[in-house]
Image 1 (cartoon, rainbow, N blue to C red):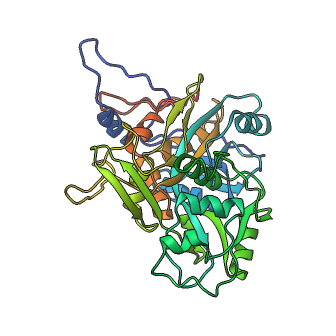
Image 2 (cartoon, one colour):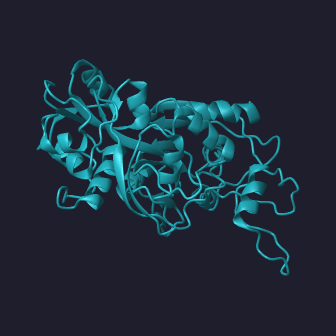
Length: 396
């Protein structure tokens, strides 16, 4: 695989998280540090390849377009998932086996950095004209995913959707990809937490029931041809393929102690942002950062800031969002001699990079989680507000 060298130009975002502060100076608040980091960008020269799952094809191109407006000599080339590339976007929280496989295939001599990249809402998408917005409880979803609910006239569906005519429809035909998928992991995590009796197996990436396809593209082509077909899909993929999407219920207590029992719709960007805070963020011994599927609709304390997310809510409204989101992650080869992969990742977690993802239909990371990615990605914040040194970059 061709490699590109990097030269430094422009405003610089250096690659270590050391903060030079006088002993008597109190620590700077995270939001101030983040603002300082936004003002410092290190540009490279050359092409960085990023492998991308088919469901998110084009997403890294959108980041590349934004990056080119700041660093015109730095380009991004998407390649298919599984192809050798120093950066890989994966649609789930990667396991150690996933990381080891990436390292062996793509950068056997270098460490691997892992950080969350963005969230993405997930729902049950189906090909039935006129049934947009069916309510599907965890029990209904579990029944469909296990193959036990095969009719749109099932009593469970009828009870939750009295205003819909579900008669004289083809049978429910469940479809899925035969390899582990992040959207399936997110949906089964939600179902298992909400109704363990209905879905005792917990989080799984593949489904036993239904028809199987090699790729998401194959699945979507078949769904378009089969009325009554249904699958777990990212909301953006469902919308792009003109599929109906289910609405999902949220029950529980929000951060203000307010009891919530409501159904949320699958078409509200604000709900995606709030729901993305319902993740558990963990760190491994190497400092890599991992975000679990965000399920339940209630942000975890410390993971969401309503002001920085530019959310407008009615006074007294509960803080509740879309209850099922997967979290995509970046795997990055950390090679000091070839810093373009790290520079690309640093840009992706900037506000501009996250904004380009949002315009693509994905959900930016909540600000408290985004700031945490600065450490593993070695983002230096120059607290004096002066340009960071423009020496040759050091990526480790």
